[in-house]
Image (cartoon, rainbow, N blue to C red):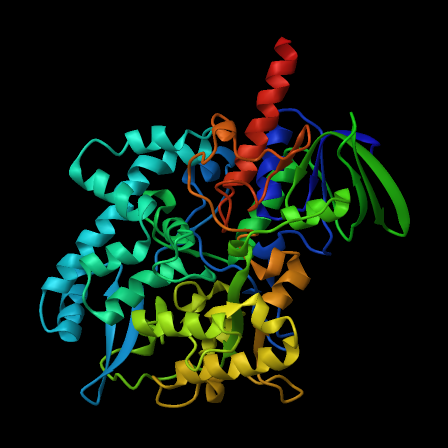
Length: 530
Protein backbone atom coordinates (compact mmCIF):
# COMPACT_ATOMS: atom_id res chain seq x y z
CA UNK A 1 0.00 0.00 0.00
CA UNK A 2 1.24 3.43 -0.96
CA UNK A 3 0.99 6.51 1.24
CA UNK A 4 -0.70 8.58 -1.46
CA UNK A 5 -3.29 7.84 -4.17
CA UNK A 6 -5.05 9.91 -6.76
CA UNK A 7 -8.38 8.64 -5.43
CA UNK A 8 -9.34 6.99 -2.14
CA UNK A 9 -12.83 5.47 -2.13
CA UNK A 10 -14.54 4.76 1.19
CA UNK A 11 -16.81 1.76 0.75
CA UNK A 12 -16.52 -1.05 -1.81
CA UNK A 13 -20.22 -1.32 -2.56
CA UNK A 14 -21.37 -1.47 -6.18
CA UNK A 15 -21.14 2.31 -6.67
CA UNK A 16 -17.61 2.48 -5.27
CA UNK A 17 -16.59 -0.32 -7.62
CA UNK A 18 -18.16 1.45 -10.62
CA UNK A 19 -16.23 4.63 -9.80
CA UNK A 20 -13.00 2.69 -9.23
CA UNK A 21 -13.25 1.02 -12.65
CA UNK A 22 -13.84 4.24 -14.56
CA UNK A 23 -11.03 6.03 -12.70
CA UNK A 24 -8.57 3.16 -12.85
CA UNK A 25 -9.07 2.86 -16.59
CA UNK A 26 -8.37 6.58 -16.92
CA UNK A 27 -4.93 5.94 -15.41
CA UNK A 28 -5.52 7.18 -11.87
CA UNK A 29 -4.27 5.28 -8.83
CA UNK A 30 -7.24 4.09 -6.77
CA UNK A 31 -7.56 2.61 -3.27
CA UNK A 32 -10.88 1.25 -1.96
CA UNK A 33 -11.36 0.82 1.79
CA UNK A 34 -14.17 -1.50 2.92
CA UNK A 35 -15.29 -2.02 6.53
CA UNK A 36 -16.79 -5.49 5.97
CA UNK A 37 -14.86 -8.69 5.32
CA UNK A 38 -16.58 -8.96 1.93
CA UNK A 39 -16.92 -6.73 -1.12
CA UNK A 40 -20.18 -5.48 -2.59
CA UNK A 41 -21.94 -3.85 0.38
CA UNK A 42 -25.71 -4.22 0.06
CA UNK A 43 -25.34 -6.01 -3.28
CA UNK A 44 -23.45 -9.00 -1.97
CA UNK A 45 -24.87 -12.54 -1.93
CA UNK A 46 -24.35 -14.68 1.15
CA UNK A 47 -24.99 -18.17 2.43
CA UNK A 48 -27.45 -16.91 5.05
CA UNK A 49 -28.50 -20.39 6.18
CA UNK A 50 -25.20 -22.29 6.65
CA UNK A 51 -26.74 -25.78 6.41
CA UNK A 52 -27.92 -25.16 2.86
CA UNK A 53 -25.94 -24.21 -0.24
CA UNK A 54 -28.13 -21.29 -1.29
CA UNK A 55 -26.64 -17.84 -1.89
CA UNK A 56 -29.21 -15.17 -1.13
CA UNK A 57 -29.00 -11.43 -1.75
CA UNK A 58 -29.66 -10.24 1.78
CA UNK A 59 -30.49 -6.59 1.16
CA UNK A 60 -30.99 -5.96 -2.58
CA UNK A 61 -32.72 -8.17 -5.09
CA UNK A 62 -33.75 -6.87 -8.50
CA UNK A 63 -32.17 -4.62 -11.12
CA UNK A 64 -33.94 -1.82 -12.98
CA UNK A 65 -31.93 1.36 -12.60
CA UNK A 66 -28.49 0.03 -13.61
CA UNK A 67 -27.92 1.76 -16.99
CA UNK A 68 -27.06 -0.47 -19.91
CA UNK A 69 -24.49 2.22 -20.82
CA UNK A 70 -22.48 1.47 -17.65
CA UNK A 71 -22.70 -2.28 -18.29
CA UNK A 72 -21.38 -1.70 -21.82
CA UNK A 73 -18.74 0.87 -20.79
CA UNK A 74 -17.26 -1.45 -18.17
CA UNK A 75 -17.67 -4.64 -20.20
CA UNK A 76 -19.63 -6.37 -17.46
CA UNK A 77 -20.69 -9.93 -18.10
CA UNK A 78 -24.17 -9.70 -16.62
CA UNK A 79 -27.41 -11.40 -17.54
CA UNK A 80 -30.56 -9.63 -16.41
CA UNK A 81 -33.50 -11.95 -16.93
CA UNK A 82 -37.10 -10.92 -17.45
CA UNK A 83 -39.71 -12.19 -14.98
CA UNK A 84 -42.64 -13.82 -16.79
CA UNK A 85 -45.02 -12.39 -14.18
CA UNK A 86 -45.00 -8.69 -13.34
CA UNK A 87 -47.26 -8.96 -10.29
CA UNK A 88 -49.91 -11.03 -8.58
CA UNK A 89 -52.35 -9.43 -6.14
CA UNK A 90 -54.79 -11.80 -4.40
CA UNK A 91 -58.22 -10.60 -3.27
CA UNK A 92 -61.46 -11.86 -1.74
CA UNK A 93 -64.59 -11.01 -3.74
CA UNK A 94 -68.11 -12.18 -2.85
CA UNK A 95 -66.58 -14.88 -0.67
CA UNK A 96 -64.38 -16.24 -3.46
CA UNK A 97 -60.60 -16.06 -3.66
CA UNK A 98 -59.23 -14.44 -6.80
CA UNK A 99 -56.01 -12.81 -7.91
CA UNK A 100 -55.09 -10.01 -10.27
CA UNK A 101 -52.30 -11.43 -12.40
CA UNK A 102 -50.30 -9.05 -14.58
CA UNK A 103 -47.91 -10.64 -17.06
CA UNK A 104 -44.75 -9.18 -18.55
CA UNK A 105 -45.22 -11.24 -21.73
CA UNK A 106 -48.95 -11.68 -22.40
CA UNK A 107 -51.23 -8.65 -22.53
CA UNK A 108 -54.33 -10.80 -23.05
CA UNK A 109 -53.78 -12.30 -19.59
CA UNK A 110 -53.70 -8.78 -18.15
CA UNK A 111 -56.92 -7.63 -19.81
CA UNK A 112 -58.76 -10.79 -18.77
CA UNK A 113 -57.49 -10.65 -15.19
CA UNK A 114 -58.39 -6.96 -14.80
CA UNK A 115 -61.86 -7.66 -16.20
CA UNK A 116 -62.39 -10.46 -13.65
CA UNK A 117 -61.52 -8.03 -10.86
CA UNK A 118 -63.44 -4.95 -12.01
CA UNK A 119 -66.18 -6.38 -14.22
CA UNK A 120 -65.24 -4.24 -17.23
CA UNK A 121 -62.38 -3.29 -19.55
CA UNK A 122 -62.33 0.39 -18.59
CA UNK A 123 -59.97 0.14 -15.59
CA UNK A 124 -57.32 -1.68 -17.61
CA UNK A 125 -57.39 1.02 -20.29
CA UNK A 126 -57.10 3.64 -17.56
CA UNK A 127 -54.16 1.77 -16.01
CA UNK A 128 -52.37 1.77 -19.36
CA UNK A 129 -53.07 5.50 -19.74
CA UNK A 130 -51.66 6.16 -16.30
CA UNK A 131 -48.49 4.11 -16.88
CA UNK A 132 -47.91 6.01 -20.12
CA UNK A 133 -46.97 8.99 -17.91
CA UNK A 134 -43.83 7.50 -16.27
CA UNK A 135 -42.89 5.98 -19.62
CA UNK A 136 -42.94 9.42 -21.27
CA UNK A 137 -41.10 10.83 -18.27
CA UNK A 138 -38.40 8.17 -18.60
CA UNK A 139 -37.97 8.90 -22.32
CA UNK A 140 -37.29 12.56 -21.57
CA UNK A 141 -35.14 12.06 -18.44
CA UNK A 142 -33.27 8.76 -18.41
CA UNK A 143 -30.28 9.70 -20.56
CA UNK A 144 -29.70 12.81 -18.43
CA UNK A 145 -29.07 10.65 -15.34
CA UNK A 146 -25.46 10.20 -16.55
CA UNK A 147 -24.98 13.88 -17.39
CA UNK A 148 -24.52 17.07 -15.33
CA UNK A 149 -27.71 18.32 -13.70
CA UNK A 150 -30.00 20.69 -15.57
CA UNK A 151 -32.26 23.17 -13.82
CA UNK A 152 -35.85 22.41 -12.95
CA UNK A 153 -36.98 25.02 -15.51
CA UNK A 154 -34.85 23.48 -18.25
CA UNK A 155 -36.20 20.01 -17.47
CA UNK A 156 -39.77 21.34 -17.43
CA UNK A 157 -39.18 22.91 -20.85
CA UNK A 158 -38.38 19.45 -22.26
CA UNK A 159 -41.91 18.39 -21.34
CA UNK A 160 -43.69 21.27 -23.10
CA UNK A 161 -43.80 19.43 -26.41
CA UNK A 162 -47.20 17.71 -26.35
CA UNK A 163 -50.19 17.11 -24.10
CA UNK A 164 -49.08 13.78 -22.62
CA UNK A 165 -45.63 15.17 -21.76
CA UNK A 166 -47.18 18.17 -20.02
CA UNK A 167 -49.53 15.84 -18.15
CA UNK A 168 -46.58 13.61 -17.11
CA UNK A 169 -44.72 16.58 -15.67
CA UNK A 170 -47.75 17.86 -13.80
CA UNK A 171 -48.80 14.46 -12.41
CA UNK A 172 -45.34 13.25 -11.42
CA UNK A 173 -43.47 16.43 -10.44
CA UNK A 174 -45.87 19.23 -9.57
CA UNK A 175 -48.70 17.65 -7.57
CA UNK A 176 -48.92 14.80 -5.03
CA UNK A 177 -49.06 11.46 -6.82
CA UNK A 178 -52.34 10.52 -5.14
CA UNK A 179 -54.16 13.15 -7.21
CA UNK A 180 -53.22 11.47 -10.51
CA UNK A 181 -53.86 7.96 -9.16
CA UNK A 182 -57.34 8.97 -8.04
CA UNK A 183 -57.99 10.82 -11.30
CA UNK A 184 -57.11 7.85 -13.51
CA UNK A 185 -58.13 4.81 -11.46
CA UNK A 186 -61.27 3.77 -9.58
CA UNK A 187 -60.54 0.32 -8.16
CA UNK A 188 -58.96 0.33 -4.68
CA UNK A 189 -56.81 -2.74 -5.37
CA UNK A 190 -55.48 -1.28 -8.64
CA UNK A 191 -54.80 2.08 -7.02
CA UNK A 192 -52.87 0.32 -4.26
CA UNK A 193 -50.92 -1.81 -6.73
CA UNK A 194 -49.75 1.38 -8.48
CA UNK A 195 -48.96 3.24 -5.27
CA UNK A 196 -46.69 0.54 -3.81
CA UNK A 197 -43.92 1.77 -6.14
CA UNK A 198 -44.13 5.09 -4.31
CA UNK A 199 -43.71 3.52 -0.86
CA UNK A 200 -41.07 0.78 -0.95
CA UNK A 201 -38.28 1.87 1.40
CA UNK A 202 -39.77 5.23 2.43
CA UNK A 203 -42.48 6.37 4.84
CA UNK A 204 -45.09 8.29 2.89
CA UNK A 205 -48.73 8.48 1.78
CA UNK A 206 -50.57 9.49 -1.44
CA UNK A 207 -51.07 13.19 -0.69
CA UNK A 208 -47.74 13.84 1.06
CA UNK A 209 -46.94 17.50 0.32
CA UNK A 210 -43.18 16.75 0.42
CA UNK A 211 -43.69 14.74 -2.82
CA UNK A 212 -41.43 12.02 -1.40
CA UNK A 213 -43.90 9.51 -2.87
CA UNK A 214 -43.50 11.03 -6.35
CA UNK A 215 -39.72 10.77 -6.22
CA UNK A 216 -39.83 7.17 -5.00
CA UNK A 217 -42.37 6.26 -7.69
CA UNK A 218 -40.18 7.71 -10.43
CA UNK A 219 -37.16 5.72 -9.26
CA UNK A 220 -39.22 2.56 -9.51
CA UNK A 221 -40.59 3.33 -12.99
CA UNK A 222 -37.93 4.99 -15.17
CA UNK A 223 -35.06 2.47 -15.22
CA UNK A 224 -33.58 2.11 -18.73
CA UNK A 225 -36.73 3.85 -20.04
CA UNK A 226 -38.95 0.83 -19.31
CA UNK A 227 -39.01 0.66 -15.52
CA UNK A 228 -39.04 -3.13 -15.68
CA UNK A 229 -37.33 -4.87 -12.75
CA UNK A 230 -35.21 -7.83 -13.81
CA UNK A 231 -33.55 -10.73 -12.06
CA UNK A 232 -29.72 -10.73 -12.02
CA UNK A 233 -28.70 -14.27 -12.93
CA UNK A 234 -26.46 -15.63 -10.18
CA UNK A 235 -28.07 -13.28 -7.65
CA UNK A 236 -27.16 -9.70 -6.85
CA UNK A 237 -23.73 -11.00 -5.85
CA UNK A 238 -23.07 -11.64 -9.54
CA UNK A 239 -23.30 -7.88 -10.11
CA UNK A 240 -20.82 -7.00 -7.36
CA UNK A 241 -18.49 -9.87 -8.40
CA UNK A 242 -18.33 -8.57 -11.96
CA UNK A 243 -17.71 -5.05 -10.70
CA UNK A 244 -14.96 -6.29 -8.39
CA UNK A 245 -13.32 -8.06 -11.32
CA UNK A 246 -13.51 -4.99 -13.54
CA UNK A 247 -12.16 -2.65 -10.83
CA UNK A 248 -9.21 -4.92 -10.03
CA UNK A 249 -8.42 -5.29 -13.73
CA UNK A 250 -8.44 -1.49 -13.94
CA UNK A 251 -5.71 -1.44 -11.28
CA UNK A 252 -7.71 -0.56 -8.17
CA UNK A 253 -6.42 -1.82 -4.83
CA UNK A 254 -9.01 -3.04 -2.31
CA UNK A 255 -8.63 -3.49 1.45
CA UNK A 256 -11.32 -5.16 3.59
CA UNK A 257 -11.88 -5.26 7.36
CA UNK A 258 -10.96 -1.59 7.54
CA UNK A 259 -11.97 0.51 10.52
CA UNK A 260 -11.94 4.21 9.67
CA UNK A 261 -10.74 6.29 12.61
CA UNK A 262 -10.85 9.82 11.20
CA UNK A 263 -11.06 11.86 8.04
CA UNK A 264 -9.22 15.10 7.40
CA UNK A 265 -11.32 16.72 4.71
CA UNK A 266 -11.09 20.43 5.46
CA UNK A 267 -7.40 21.02 4.84
CA UNK A 268 -5.47 21.30 1.59
CA UNK A 269 -4.92 17.57 1.58
CA UNK A 270 -7.42 14.78 2.27
CA UNK A 271 -6.23 12.05 4.59
CA UNK A 272 -7.87 8.92 5.94
CA UNK A 273 -6.78 7.38 9.23
CA UNK A 274 -7.80 3.75 9.60
CA UNK A 275 -7.01 0.45 11.29
CA UNK A 276 -6.40 -2.72 9.27
CA UNK A 277 -4.57 -6.00 9.92
CA UNK A 278 -3.70 -4.95 13.46
CA UNK A 279 -2.02 -1.71 12.36
CA UNK A 280 -2.95 1.96 12.23
CA UNK A 281 -2.48 3.48 8.78
CA UNK A 282 -2.84 6.87 7.13
CA UNK A 283 -3.25 7.50 3.42
CA UNK A 284 -3.59 10.71 1.49
CA UNK A 285 -5.85 11.14 -1.50
CA UNK A 286 -5.98 13.89 -4.05
CA UNK A 287 -9.68 13.06 -4.27
CA UNK A 288 -11.87 11.33 -1.70
CA UNK A 289 -15.02 9.49 -2.78
CA UNK A 290 -17.55 8.64 -0.08
CA UNK A 291 -19.78 5.62 -0.62
CA UNK A 292 -21.83 6.08 2.54
CA UNK A 293 -24.32 8.60 3.89
CA UNK A 294 -24.08 12.19 5.07
CA UNK A 295 -24.60 10.91 8.60
CA UNK A 296 -21.35 8.92 8.55
CA UNK A 297 -19.40 11.59 6.70
CA UNK A 298 -20.41 14.09 9.41
CA UNK A 299 -19.43 11.62 12.13
CA UNK A 300 -15.96 10.92 10.72
CA UNK A 301 -15.37 14.60 9.96
CA UNK A 302 -16.47 15.62 13.46
CA UNK A 303 -19.43 17.66 12.24
CA UNK A 304 -23.10 17.86 13.28
CA UNK A 305 -25.61 16.08 11.03
CA UNK A 306 -29.12 17.45 10.59
CA UNK A 307 -31.40 15.05 8.68
CA UNK A 308 -34.79 15.83 7.15
CA UNK A 309 -37.93 14.02 8.32
CA UNK A 310 -38.19 12.40 4.87
CA UNK A 311 -34.79 10.73 5.35
CA UNK A 312 -36.21 8.07 7.71
CA UNK A 313 -36.15 4.53 6.37
CA UNK A 314 -39.27 2.38 6.32
CA UNK A 315 -38.72 -1.15 5.13
CA UNK A 316 -38.75 -4.57 6.79
CA UNK A 317 -36.88 -7.29 4.94
CA UNK A 318 -37.27 -11.03 5.28
CA UNK A 319 -35.33 -13.80 3.55
CA UNK A 320 -36.70 -17.33 3.50
CA UNK A 321 -35.55 -20.66 2.14
CA UNK A 322 -38.49 -22.94 1.28
CA UNK A 323 -38.42 -26.70 0.78
CA UNK A 324 -41.50 -26.28 -1.41
CA UNK A 325 -43.76 -23.50 -2.69
CA UNK A 326 -47.10 -23.02 -0.91
CA UNK A 327 -50.37 -23.23 -2.89
CA UNK A 328 -52.76 -20.31 -3.26
CA UNK A 329 -56.40 -20.30 -2.24
CA UNK A 330 -57.04 -18.75 -5.67
CA UNK A 331 -56.74 -22.14 -7.38
CA UNK A 332 -56.64 -20.77 -10.93
CA UNK A 333 -53.20 -19.26 -10.29
CA UNK A 334 -50.27 -21.70 -10.00
CA UNK A 335 -47.72 -20.80 -7.31
CA UNK A 336 -44.99 -20.75 -9.97
CA UNK A 337 -46.78 -17.84 -11.68
CA UNK A 338 -47.92 -16.03 -8.53
CA UNK A 339 -44.53 -15.85 -6.83
CA UNK A 340 -42.40 -15.38 -9.94
CA UNK A 341 -43.38 -11.71 -10.04
CA UNK A 342 -44.15 -9.37 -7.15
CA UNK A 343 -46.86 -10.85 -4.92
CA UNK A 344 -48.76 -8.06 -3.16
CA UNK A 345 -50.58 -8.45 0.16
CA UNK A 346 -52.63 -5.93 2.14
CA UNK A 347 -51.55 -3.25 -0.30
CA UNK A 348 -54.97 -1.85 -1.15
CA UNK A 349 -55.00 1.95 -1.47
CA UNK A 350 -57.20 2.70 1.55
CA UNK A 351 -55.50 -0.05 3.57
CA UNK A 352 -52.09 1.58 3.03
CA UNK A 353 -53.43 4.98 4.04
CA UNK A 354 -54.69 3.38 7.26
CA UNK A 355 -51.45 1.50 7.94
CA UNK A 356 -49.47 4.71 7.38
CA UNK A 357 -51.68 6.55 9.87
CA UNK A 358 -51.31 3.79 12.47
CA UNK A 359 -47.52 3.64 12.06
CA UNK A 360 -47.41 7.46 12.31
CA UNK A 361 -49.16 7.13 15.68
CA UNK A 362 -46.32 4.90 16.91
CA UNK A 363 -47.92 1.44 16.63
CA UNK A 364 -47.45 -1.49 14.29
CA UNK A 365 -50.40 -1.41 11.88
CA UNK A 366 -53.21 -3.96 12.37
CA UNK A 367 -52.59 -5.15 8.81
CA UNK A 368 -49.10 -4.71 7.47
CA UNK A 369 -48.74 -4.21 3.71
CA UNK A 370 -45.99 -6.25 2.12
CA UNK A 371 -44.84 -7.94 -1.06
CA UNK A 372 -42.78 -11.02 -1.80
CA UNK A 373 -41.07 -12.52 -4.78
CA UNK A 374 -39.19 -15.72 -5.56
CA UNK A 375 -35.82 -15.25 -7.27
CA UNK A 376 -35.36 -18.95 -8.01
CA UNK A 377 -38.46 -19.20 -10.22
CA UNK A 378 -36.60 -17.03 -12.75
CA UNK A 379 -33.02 -17.99 -11.90
CA UNK A 380 -32.32 -21.14 -9.85
CA UNK A 381 -28.54 -20.89 -10.26
CA UNK A 382 -28.23 -19.48 -6.71
CA UNK A 383 -29.21 -22.94 -5.41
CA UNK A 384 -26.95 -26.01 -5.37
CA UNK A 385 -28.10 -28.70 -7.89
CA UNK A 386 -29.43 -31.00 -5.15
CA UNK A 387 -31.62 -28.22 -3.75
CA UNK A 388 -33.00 -27.50 -7.21
CA UNK A 389 -33.85 -31.15 -7.70
CA UNK A 390 -35.67 -31.27 -4.36
CA UNK A 391 -37.83 -28.24 -5.25
CA UNK A 392 -36.27 -25.67 -2.90
CA UNK A 393 -36.87 -21.97 -3.49
CA UNK A 394 -35.83 -18.64 -2.00
CA UNK A 395 -38.44 -16.03 -1.09
CA UNK A 396 -37.85 -12.38 -0.21
CA UNK A 397 -40.36 -10.16 1.59
CA UNK A 398 -40.43 -6.35 1.61
CA UNK A 399 -42.54 -4.96 4.43
CA UNK A 400 -44.02 -1.47 4.13
CA UNK A 401 -45.08 1.06 6.78
CA UNK A 402 -42.34 -0.13 9.11
CA UNK A 403 -40.50 3.12 9.94
CA UNK A 404 -37.28 3.09 11.96
CA UNK A 405 -39.01 4.95 14.82
CA UNK A 406 -41.23 1.92 15.56
CA UNK A 407 -38.24 -0.34 16.20
CA UNK A 408 -35.60 1.82 17.84
CA UNK A 409 -36.85 1.48 21.44
CA UNK A 410 -37.08 -2.33 21.52
CA UNK A 411 -35.82 -3.73 18.25
CA UNK A 412 -35.89 -7.43 19.26
CA UNK A 413 -39.49 -7.35 20.46
CA UNK A 414 -40.81 -5.24 17.58
CA UNK A 415 -38.96 -7.31 14.99
CA UNK A 416 -40.65 -10.48 16.28
CA UNK A 417 -44.07 -8.82 16.27
CA UNK A 418 -43.62 -7.38 12.79
CA UNK A 419 -42.41 -10.74 11.45
CA UNK A 420 -45.57 -12.43 12.75
CA UNK A 421 -47.81 -9.78 11.19
CA UNK A 422 -46.13 -9.92 7.80
CA UNK A 423 -46.32 -13.73 7.73
CA UNK A 424 -50.00 -13.54 8.71
CA UNK A 425 -50.57 -11.11 5.85
CA UNK A 426 -49.14 -13.59 3.32
CA UNK A 427 -50.79 -16.63 4.94
CA UNK A 428 -54.32 -15.30 4.48
CA UNK A 429 -54.00 -16.08 0.75
CA UNK A 430 -52.42 -19.54 1.10
CA UNK A 431 -53.82 -23.05 1.53
CA UNK A 432 -51.31 -23.62 4.33
CA UNK A 433 -49.05 -21.32 6.37
CA UNK A 434 -45.80 -20.48 4.62
CA UNK A 435 -44.02 -21.54 7.85
CA UNK A 436 -44.91 -25.17 6.95
CA UNK A 437 -42.90 -24.79 3.75
CA UNK A 438 -39.74 -23.38 5.34
CA UNK A 439 -36.56 -25.41 5.17
CA UNK A 440 -35.32 -26.46 8.60
CA UNK A 441 -31.72 -26.16 9.82
CA UNK A 442 -29.91 -28.99 11.61
CA UNK A 443 -30.64 -27.40 14.97
CA UNK A 444 -34.37 -27.42 14.20
CA UNK A 445 -34.68 -23.68 13.51
CA UNK A 446 -36.65 -22.54 10.46
CA UNK A 447 -34.71 -20.90 7.62
CA UNK A 448 -36.06 -17.39 7.95
CA UNK A 449 -34.20 -14.14 8.61
CA UNK A 450 -35.76 -10.76 9.36
CA UNK A 451 -34.16 -7.31 9.23
CA UNK A 452 -35.77 -4.17 10.65
CA UNK A 453 -34.63 -0.63 9.72
CA UNK A 454 -32.57 -0.66 12.93
CA UNK A 455 -30.79 -3.85 11.80
CA UNK A 456 -30.17 -2.35 8.37
CA UNK A 457 -28.65 0.77 9.91
CA UNK A 458 -26.45 -1.32 12.22
CA UNK A 459 -25.21 -3.54 9.40
CA UNK A 460 -24.76 -1.02 6.60
CA UNK A 461 -24.68 2.40 8.28
CA UNK A 462 -27.70 3.54 6.27
CA UNK A 463 -29.29 6.43 8.16
CA UNK A 464 -32.32 5.13 10.10
CA UNK A 465 -32.40 2.07 7.85
CA UNK A 466 -33.09 4.08 4.70
CA UNK A 467 -32.12 1.76 1.84
CA UNK A 468 -31.65 4.87 -0.35
CA UNK A 469 -29.37 6.51 2.31
CA UNK A 470 -31.59 9.60 2.41
CA UNK A 471 -34.72 10.97 0.74
CA UNK A 472 -34.64 10.35 -3.01
CA UNK A 473 -34.27 13.40 -5.23
CA UNK A 474 -35.87 14.50 -8.47
CA UNK A 475 -33.57 13.99 -11.48
CA UNK A 476 -32.84 17.69 -11.92
CA UNK A 477 -31.30 20.55 -9.95
CA UNK A 478 -33.63 21.94 -7.30
CA UNK A 479 -31.25 24.81 -6.46
CA UNK A 480 -29.43 27.26 -8.68
CA UNK A 481 -25.99 26.27 -7.35
CA UNK A 482 -26.58 22.63 -8.38
CA UNK A 483 -27.07 23.42 -12.07
CA UNK A 484 -24.20 22.02 -14.13
CA UNK A 485 -22.83 19.95 -11.26
CA UNK A 486 -22.79 16.15 -11.20
CA UNK A 487 -24.86 16.02 -8.01
CA UNK A 488 -22.03 14.39 -6.05
CA UNK A 489 -20.45 17.48 -4.50
CA UNK A 490 -20.03 17.95 -0.74
CA UNK A 491 -19.11 21.04 1.27
CA UNK A 492 -15.47 19.92 1.12
CA UNK A 493 -13.08 20.48 -1.80
CA UNK A 494 -12.34 17.33 -3.80
CA UNK A 495 -14.59 15.21 -1.57
CA UNK A 496 -17.53 13.67 -3.44
CA UNK A 497 -20.36 11.27 -2.75
CA UNK A 498 -20.17 8.23 -5.02
CA UNK A 499 -23.08 6.28 -3.49
CA UNK A 500 -26.82 6.53 -2.98
CA UNK A 501 -26.48 9.75 -0.95
CA UNK A 502 -25.66 11.68 -4.13
CA UNK A 503 -28.39 13.44 -6.07
CA UNK A 504 -29.96 10.85 -8.40
CA UNK A 505 -28.62 8.13 -6.11
CA UNK A 506 -30.62 5.28 -4.65
CA UNK A 507 -31.11 1.58 -5.46
CA UNK A 508 -28.64 -0.61 -7.36
CA UNK A 509 -27.89 1.83 -10.16
CA UNK A 510 -24.18 2.60 -10.44
CA UNK A 511 -25.30 6.10 -11.47
CA UNK A 512 -23.66 8.03 -8.59
CA UNK A 513 -20.51 5.92 -9.00
CA UNK A 514 -20.34 6.91 -12.65
CA UNK A 515 -21.13 10.56 -11.90
CA UNK A 516 -18.50 10.84 -9.15
CA UNK A 517 -15.90 9.40 -11.52
CA UNK A 518 -16.91 11.91 -14.20
CA UNK A 519 -16.58 14.75 -11.69
CA UNK A 520 -13.03 13.67 -10.79
CA UNK A 521 -12.04 13.27 -14.45
CA UNK A 522 -13.53 16.68 -15.24
CA UNK A 523 -11.35 18.27 -12.54
CA UNK A 524 -8.26 16.35 -13.70
CA UNK A 525 -8.85 17.64 -17.22
CA UNK A 526 -9.15 21.21 -15.95
CA UNK A 527 -5.91 20.84 -13.98
CA UNK A 528 -4.04 19.48 -17.00
CA UNK A 529 -5.21 22.42 -19.12
CA UNK A 530 -4.61 24.90 -16.31
